[in-house]
Amino acid sequence: MADTKTFLEEKDIPKVWYNIAPDLPTPLSPVIHPGTKKPIGPQDLAPIFPMALIAQEVSNERYIEIPDPVREVYKLWRPTPLYRAHRLEKALDTPARIYYKYEGVSPAGSHKPNTAVAQAYYNKAEGVRRLATETGAGQWGSALSFACQIFGLECKVYMVKVSYQQKPYRRSMMETWGAKVVASPSTDTHAGQSILAKDPNSPGSLGIAISEAVEDAATHDDTKYSLGSVLNHVLLHQTVVGQECQTQFEKLDDYPDVVIGCVGGGSNFAGISLPFVKEKLAGRKIQFIAVEPEAAPSITKGQYAYDFGDTAELTPLIKMYTLGHSFVPPSIHAGGLRYHGMSPIISLLCHEGIVEARAVHQVPVFEAAIQFARTEGIIPAPESAHAIRVAIDEALKCKQSGQAKTILFNLSGHGYFDLAAYDAYLSGRLEDYAYPKKEVEAAIAGLPRI
Ligand SMILES: Cc1ncc(COP(=O)(O)O)c(C=O)c1O
Image (cartoon, rainbow, N blue to C red; front, side, top):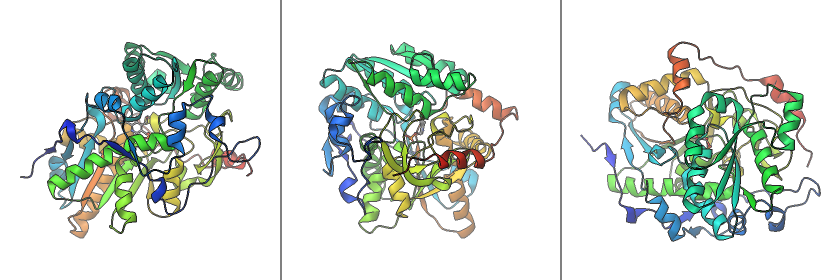
């Protein structure tokens, strides 16, 4: 039997991040200032991001060197293992070969530290004292809390209220790494106060929490804002994942036919897929599937249009698949996927037909998570289980067709802080949410006109 894990050595940690910008089939649309309706410049972003990250956001260099201090921190958990899912394959009785890259071995338990460490490093290098951010499931907040602790920065986390209630120990984890955490919407910002005035029971959303964190950064001189997904520089930092996979597949003498990842803002999917998208653009045949929740189906049911990244309309306008920035997604357990928008890069790749998107309901997602846990052992994050659902579906198609495809998915995190969600599923309390068509239509009607 072939090996279960393919390891690399620390010297194999990539030395560069891969920037897809120069290889995109059409250029990304400019980011627009909501007031002037003109493209924004670096100076517009300077109050909330350090210059090094702004430069990466607009860079056209194909490869960007990873600073040594960042690689040194990566060594705490990278390179991450690539697993062959022998036991899952057997349970499915499929001729497909299923592989998963396991990012849950990082200190915070997901792929998020790949960018958190880089962002904390560049902020520290430019003399920033404090970072403000949002978190949905708590994975991003944990990652940034850890990274800030490593580089000696203060960290304030606005945690989406429903996750704050569902996952009290994620808060403890962030506080262990020294962060300050509040439930969002909070009374600490004008954005939070105005949401609470309209709806005191608001469950919160990533869009609302982003508004709070951006306002915090814009109103404190010593503070910058840090985003865990969506933006080009965040996706860039995640490409260590796919680059390592490429080296691991070389060792295995295999190559993926299908690459799958769940999408909230698009960063873990980008991390595993963009280095392979480069190969596809050069002529190789690979299928890419981005998996989103049926409760927040921005790519499959949204519009490709300019919209705000947040609820309070504080961010610039970006061209992306969106359900409308005023849409508050239902309180599904995959909190990290409850976002109205999508990264511009992933949106463009979907629009160009290079990546396809699929929406799935949470009950079948948890069925897949349980099957995975019972065969492979690891209890997956509910977000990552969206990718597992589609990997299983694709492997079952192979069973029908007799094709022995190679399927790769990103197991973006573990679910050891998500056991309340597992409890809901196991006790039969977990329900699917119908796609909230009316609310989305109302939110889309409110898209800014560009
Ligand atoms: C484990 C995990 N996977 C995926 C995501 C989705 O985010 P992204 O699309 O940026 O990878 C999150 C977000 O919190 C997450 O925690």
